[in-house]
Image (cartoon, rainbow, N blue to C red; front, side, top):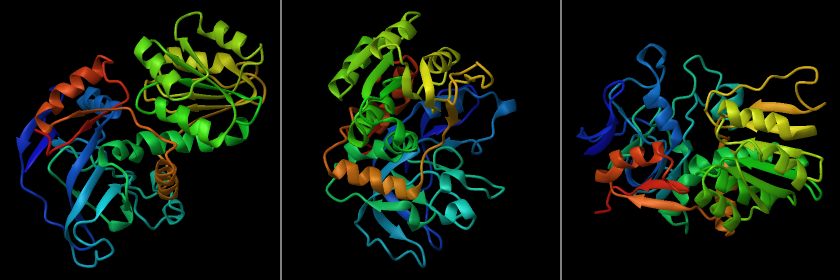
Length: 346
């Protein structure tokens, strides 16, 4: 089969021919119908060899996946051949306390979480081997290209927003920093779960327009004036909830600067920014947390939200042959919403 692999430190990914996996006991083989492209992949490929702790090279990229069941190992009999499914990405041990609650994203086993495309071969390929059928959710009537981003961009955003839902009621102010694949979904999730005034922040006009299109009340340019603009829009109160989907030193600083008393701050982006917490470093009683993906039960909730029509994913579609170029566009900030690889697309 053909796959997009990261083969050498510092080199761009390339399309290669590799053997098609054969499912073992409990495993499921999917023919990939859609695979998402994520900034996390760029983070992996920019990590120096001395600090690299992801899957061994060569590594097939892609941790967002929708596919069709084509083969099953012994004991994997829940999903009949031909079933279209979404793949829950953060694969844990399945046995620790967190995994028993469906929080495999926070698995405590010494080997940690082993997602496809990060720790093991992923979905930007013609086929994907899934370690256990508990990591599959029926696609139902959802469109595969639209739905694939729900498995990470949707789930990660939903997990971050749901934890702050008490700060999203009427009269509250929510700030979303970074209107990319995750941010534009977070705006819709905030709108679905709460009644807060939503202020989106980005440096690109097309992404600010996307924010307006999906439900943001205000779209603010992320420059040196952003803090003052947000303060004015919140009538001097600041934000009750801040979701930073960039995580750079600049955006994290902004997140802390606009947080109000009792604010919830979620730093989701992997931009290496840090937020000091201490006396008068943040507003009193403000809480800052970092997040990673979401639970299996939360993915079911995201899928239900999509079935209700309350989530619309902005997507750009590409063939497998175009996948290497997509990462170049992503690194230049040229992708609007989520880039999706469709292996069968010509």
